[in-house]
Amino acid sequence: MDARFGLAGCLLLGTLGVAPGGSAAPPTPGPRARDLGIPFVGTPGPLNAITDVAGVEVGFTTIVEGEGALQVGKGPVRTGVTAILPRGRETLGAVFGAYAVGNGNGEMTGTTWIEESGLVTTPILITNTHSVGVVRDAVVEWLVRRGATEQLWGLPIVAETWDGHLNDLNGFHVRREHAFAALDNARGGPVAEGNVGGGTGMHTFEFKGGTGTSSRRVRVKGVGDYTVGVLVQSNFGRRWQLQVAGVPVGREWPEDAPFTADAGRPNELGSIIVVIATDAPLLPTQLKRIAARASMGIARTGGTAGNGSGDIFVAFSTANAAAASADAGLQHASFLPNDQLDGLFESTVLAVEESIINAMVAARTMTGIDDHRLVAIDHARLQRILEKYRRLER
Image (cartoon, rainbow, N blue to C red):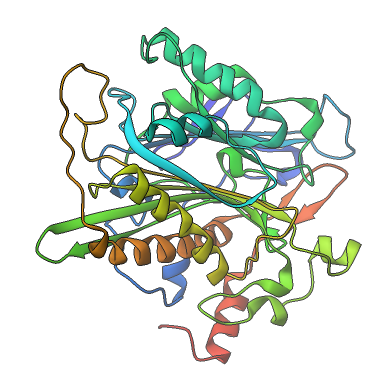
């Protein structure tokens, strides 16, 4: 059975769409954070998604199977794969890129070559912690089959966050076919959020979290208009830290916080992967500065990059296609002066913030291994808290 959603880029394979008993129904398009009246700063693109950057495509494979007690190797399974293709499946060209780290208790493969070359030469994939290897190898095979690896080799970018609260992490349920499907299903257009792809089993501030996206339009005076798009796999934070539009929502909402209930208030738990795309012409050194700003967007929601957190960010520019190619000969690159980057910095911060909140708003309550449960943030209650602080836009 193969079930597709109306949102581009979301695929559920086999019998993986709905866990028995309805504990993990497939996500359906619902209100996003702005629809609830949350007052975000800045003007998004028409989709308010990373795919507002022309050429960027996103695909998902979402795996949901079983329920009840954990049986390693059998389930329950709550995981998946997310694929981001900077120039789409038909082009697969290199782009200028860079990465940055907020806290390094995590993994993103391929970063040594990004740092050395200033290029992102493969699709970017995100999955769970123990599936990085199989997804990485699958990307190499997918590229080889398409004749798309540089110099007959490839160093894929594959990142992870931990979903072991809900998912049979040590059962190794992500297979090469799941990575192939996420890549083959990548599309432009609207992007599914919440319990999809690599974000399927993730939490955010002890609510159900997962995949989120947002974008911002930027006008650079005297040069032109550009877009910054962000996609996050959000899996971090303790409840008391959560802030929405500057409001201490987490301190108003202490219940249904399983990690705090089990362990009290230790350091922040979890990780977040941030992918930042832009069509602004930027050099790799400038993109590294863009990537570093992701930490500020996370901080606006309350995150503090604790010792156990893997906060890893990658940024790329779809401009300068010829300069990023492997063709011989003298290449020419255009780029904005450093003095004109402030709007892009700000847009990155704001789009990361909104992407995280979008992931929470889109997510649905999910039950996983041993009946562990992560509740979705209740939209009406969130609105009431924001209204109490006079921060709700009607």
